[in-house]
Image (cartoon, rainbow over all chains, first blue to last red; front, top):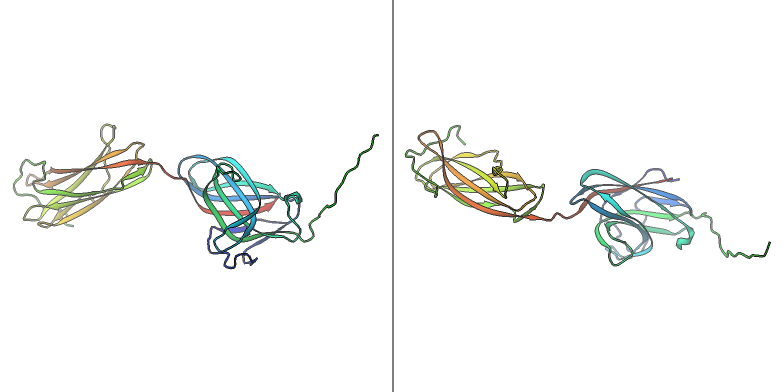
Length: 153
Length: 141
């Protein structure tokens, strides 16, 4: 159970041993099917507009990247106006069909921008880098070799 | 700074920097609407004696009367030949502006007299989106 785990403030002082999992931040352990609520807090200045919050899990392959993305969630067209201590809640579901396996540990890369994170139209505005990782629980339920047969009633 | 401005002994018709000269008006080339713009006006005492000098400023962009620039400390007694600067601020409107900076000297008639003027343009900038103080908290639902 995840209970209000603080993921840390924006930092670029991480990943000194790129490619190796060094768990010096918070590890979030989840099971397949879990719905995770992420509460993003931030200050915003500039013109009001519509922005996309994207979370990628994957691996930082070096101290400064690149980031090898495994899966991306995004919430688009969030209306934001200038202000401080603003909050935006985003939920995502971790499913087995995402290509994740029990015991996997991934870095997390939060990005805020405009457009679609998975197209060339993406324009990055801000990135949130932390030392925290997300782990798929070792005991996460896995269904495999699924098949279905049908016969007339 | 002395408590009372020191007067010029002979009040002359001025307007072209007879006793003072605005040497520089410093301001950003552009600013976004709603932002606080910093202005610094440097003035030189052109006379051979200490006189009281005051600064003023207004914004030209179509509004009438012209909005003024706020200078928290707007006067000082300048020694002969010395320069001094005054810092002011204004809130950038949604238009490009022309800053009009004015200098005044304190006359023997106990009045401030306009003496010099200098202008500087500030364009309207487009503000960039900026996120800061980012953090994320997670919980299961």
